[in-house]
Amino acid sequence: MKKNFIIAALALGLAACLPEDGPVLSSAHADNAPSAAIRHGLPDFASLVEKVGSAVVNISVDQTIQAEEEGNPFAGDPFFDFLRRFGVPTPGFPHPGHPNGGAPRVRQGIGSGFIVSSDGYVLTNAHVVGDNKAEVTVKLSDKREFKAKVIGIDRRTDVAVIKIEAKNLPVVAIGNPESTRVGEWVAAIGSPFGFEHSVTAGIISAKARRLPDENYVPFIQTDVAINPGNSGGPLFDLNGRVIGINSQIYSRSGGFMGISFAIPIDVAMKVRDQLVQHGRVQRGRLGVYIQSMSPELAPSFGLDAPRGALVAQVEPDSSAARAGVKPGDIVLKVDGKDVDESNELPRLVGDRLPGSKIKLEIWRDGKRREVTAVLDELPQEETEQGSASQEKNSYDKLGLGLRSLNPREAAQLGVAGGLVVEAVSGQAARAGLRGGDVILSLNNQPVASAAQFRQMVEKAGKRFALLIQRGNARLFVPVRLD
Image 1 (tube, rainbow, N blue to C red):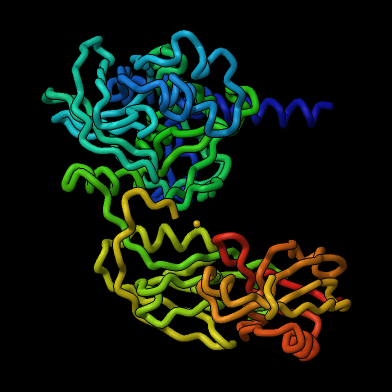
Image 2: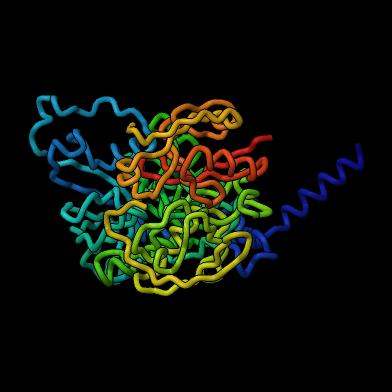
């Protein structure tokens, strides 16, 4: 008992000796990781807010929209978009048949932003601004208000740049998201539900998080409370440096549920530079459709572990086609940088300007090889993803009912031949094949007839990959017979 008392007293004594502006959080990472003063054993958020709060702004938007936009007069409203991004029901929004649903209306929205240059450039979210015709008002922490000009919007990254006519403004310091670590404290300042300059805090939950249909942003995931109105506001490390722009939440109710996402500030600043200089963002384009390399597919391609981006389709006369890239190639590196996950490839290519030369390290036929591609430009609005000759054959080993493509179908698909899947069961069903799929190749060997396909399966062993056409997309499907 006495021993425990002594230990407790010693611990309290050591804590009492810590200075109020005490040590950095981690001296071992002082050169790379954010550090901050500790006050009474906790992060000093009060000093942080005093230091950076004046550079955070409130943004209000008035925009005239047509009722037919997306079938809803509230289309484009930041709050409506904020909820809809994750499929949250939005009761109370009038439908087109509503008495007020047929006339143009002014939608009003709120958001947040932060000043990145003393002459008035402000960063926020594209979904806050809406479009270049919006009337945007910026309110500073000292209550001054300015009409802002929309410099540019990039919907792929959800970043917008606006400008106010003012000088000697307070600005944020730009941090380095790469140096942050999962578990570090962060803070957000914004205007949730219109409550200006609200402060919330939490930790970094994950880095380089990929979201569905988002190919160009490796999001920072946090548990900082973010709600409608916080969009476009800054995410700070404990040194008061901006490391991200708060953009999205995951929610089943429309309110905060513990998961929020921020756009890394280095991504946003690259977009800012292009929007200020050119009014739009130019991105390189390779011209391939890709899919993930799964543990089931890797052995079929001779890889010891799943990595890289598997090329399912190469567009004719594209940068990739001119460089000699083929379906079934696996892109392992871009200019020496590893492609660990397939969704890293669009960002690595998109970061390059059109006309740039890039070196691709690819895996083909069990060997590494290098090709050089000259990038095209990604279009501004592109998103980046029977007859008598029919031959039928039931193949019990896989559980497939197949027939050959007729000439008309082959011409429509732009292929020389293939097999249409008419029935699926057993191993094929477990592999994910569906009726209507068109099998084009097995282990990169073209398939022309059911008889040939049967022979190829016999020689392939217990694991192989099928290239199939499903709708307008092509993908590889791993098949296991064991």
